[in-house]
Amino acid sequence: MTKEPAPRIEDLLRELAPQVLGTLMRRHEHFDACEDAVQEALLAAALQWAEKGVPENPRSWLVTVASRRLVDEWRSASARRRREETAAVLEVPDRGTAPDHDDTLALLFMCCHPSLSIPSQLALTLRAVGGLTTAEVAHAFLVPEATMAQRISRAKERIRSTGVRFDLPPEPERSDRLRVVLHALYLVFNEGYTTTSGTAVHRTDLTAEAIRLARILHVLMPGEGEAAGLLALMLLTDARRAARATDDGSIVPLDEQRRDLWDKAQIEEGVALLTRTLGTVPIGPYQLQASIAAVHDEAPTAKATDWAQILALYEVLERVSPGPVVTLNRAVAVAMVHGPRAGLALVGTLDKDDRMAHNHRLEAVRGHLLERAGDLVAARESYRRAARMTASLPERRYLALRAAGLADV
Image: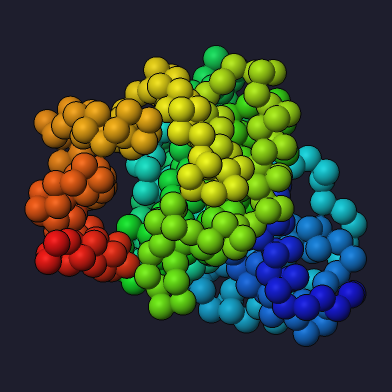
């Protein structure tokens, strides 16, 4: 046994969690029972390793403990027997090595199966692949633990009832299924970087977990350009996190951020990922978004930003992956290159798009462009509408202050 500090144990357990679950799934199937057994083994490890040290083969230790928990559960006539055997389980010795085969990728594909709703995909990914407890997943999405437990339980039942196989999808399906996996990780990151409700500007627990899982995916699928693109996008975006808010939690817009606070190492890593990928594989939306983020990050000042290049990238992105959010972002680039009135004309094309009906960013961008165009009264009203629409308290405060600043102009 070797002594490890508590944070190192937590990191190790999260790294090993999907590998151990994959091993159990390969041996026994029954996702719900295997996942519960792994969670209990992780808890046992957290308690024992902090006191006695990490075993020589921690993965094998977890597989042994989880397997015993699983067998005990199947054999036991009641929960009482399982509680009585807990002490013995905690003393499991380190016996040999677990299989070298890593089933993390198969686990990711299963958790992001298209038969599951997006909230269920995210919850299962964070719990089964991320190694988070139900309480931690509930906290991540700001819902009661009981609600999240029910959501996870329904997702497990869905996997069981639909006969989702624990294996990599066949080649004809793999690209479509990979898009679902990438989208799930993208949503986790976005919720962490731009928290949609509550008092926080960002949630570093979610962004860090999304980046960690994206790293795993990139290692497991090194030839997939979009997996590399998503990781690069996360790194290049997260690099600005320290400059996004003041000490009192007020939002700082991109053009006003202190660029000396940006994480240069993350920017370099993200750019290097893009450099290795672009031109070697078919380009996709995550690579394009990462390229846009790289143009922002590499500009020494806001004024030095190459908006013409950003606009060109958005035009390609809109052809590759059209959608109202891409159009809205392109409108900002259009305004920076061709003037605010040109940007406003493009924003106006989204007014009848039902997908943007409750998106406060449409009104926020409109307010910004109206302010730049000198129409301060209309800008103030747009900022006020946007403030009423968002559930994020920092964003609401930022937008309200923008409106208030125009009140006496």
